[in-house]
Amino acid sequence: MSSENRTIAAIATAHGIGSIAIVRMSGAAALEIAERLTGRSFHPRQATLTPIYDREGELIDQGIVIYFQAPRSFTGEDIVEFQVHGGVVVAQRILQELLVAGARLAEPGEFTKRAFLHGKIDLTQAEAVAKLIEAKSEDAGRILARQMKGELREFVEEVRERLIRILAYVEVNIDYAEEDLPETLEEEMGRQLAELAQRLRRVVELSERRRGLIEGFRIAIIGRPNTGKSSLLNKMVAYERAIVSDVAGTTRDTIEEEIRIGSHLVRIIDTAGIREAKDQIEQVGIERSLKAVEESDLVLALFDGSTPLTPEDREIIGLLKEKGKESIAVINKIDLGIRLEREELEGLDLVEISVQEDITPLIERIEERLDRYGGREEVILISTRQIEGVREALEEIEASFSPLEEGELEIFAFHLNRAIDLIGSISRPMATSELLDKMFGEFCLGK
Ligand SMILES: Nc1nc2c(ncn2[C@@H]2O[C@H](COP(=O)(O)OP(=O)(O)OP(=O)(O)O)[C@@H](O)[C@H]2O)c(=O)[nH]1
Ligand SMILES: [Mg+2]
Image 1 (cartoon, rainbow, N blue to C red):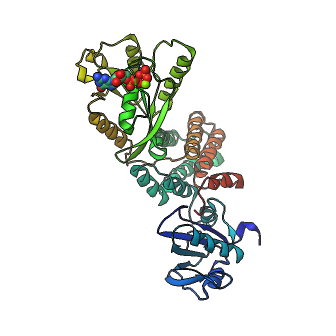
Image 2: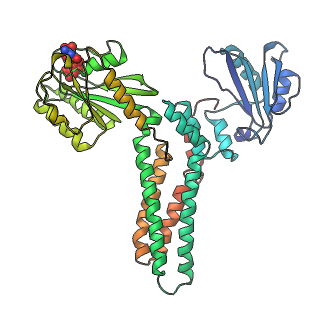
Image 3: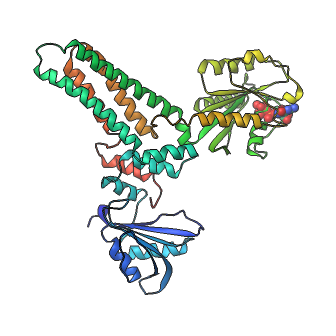
């Protein structure tokens, strides 16, 4: 039997101390191997408490064994699960016995890969499984759960069907009509395509904005030197992570820490103060600050409320307004009284705090902003692969507008066919095994 369809086994639970560990086996020999280790037979979908022995007949553990008969299992093959006492020792001994009895160790993601190959799930569902394991927030969990149920697959199929229908109308005319398309039909097709393109554009845009929801948000703290950026970071992580001093230019490099805000796991990035650099190291630090802004999902721009605005402050205000970056303008040090010209910050989302006293109003505002990313109304693409797929399909649809108008129906059909393939490949790739290996290889072991 080739290694591709041999029976595989792996420990499915996290490595470490825990009350229960699960060892999982999938493939044609699974049932027979399980019977050999226990000396008994199993009925599908019944939890059976049984002793489990090694090949010498020595007891390894007493545990629950469940048999899922093909094709009604996660992989579509026979699966046997051993739920045994936790920690690593028992699970490892059982795994060892399974391997000796003829199973081979599963590669990362191989169970899910088999589920895909046997048509139990499509690629979007497989990706959702992988991301759910690493989800960084409850909202991410919700989106991924919907995707596992097939929400994105349904969306993809709906778009694909609509494209096929439009193409079919037009192809009838390529074959039979002497002249151009009837004008009303052309208009109708154009209108439908434009509507579809608009929807896809929205999905791509929303998905990009919400990428942090799945992967964890990045929040950059910026501001001119001495506004209290490092003090804020320290307060947020609740220990003295960054050096704080009244010397301007204290922070020279970016500092990152992960914290929880509400239901979100976020990465906070403290940056070097932005000003005309005094030396080369500071210059590099400042360039990194600007890069941190680029890469973040939300920017906290800090201003020292106890002094009037400086040219650097104004530069930062300009940056926020012109880039349209998601941001909160934070006026700090209000314990010292306010001398900053508030009116110049008009139009920005404003919060006033004293890092030395209380940052609760800021934390609440951040939480509100992050919650807003979690909108539930539209499907979300959760991987670069998915986003690229839709974007490329969108380009083909856009490229089909003018040939449709000009009656070049073959060219129109060419672009539409490409769009149909590209959209379809999001859930069912024109399977190159390389792509699959790469995708499933990123899964964790035993999944
Ligand atoms: N009174 C008062 N002082 C503060 C407050 N927040 C920070 N400071 C003081 O402001 C000074 C600068 O703080 P830092 O946190 O080092 O400022 P920074 O923005 O990181 O500065 P650079 O790293 O140089 O860019 C320190 O002396 C802090 O103690 C505040 O809310 N009130
Ligand atoms: Mg600092």
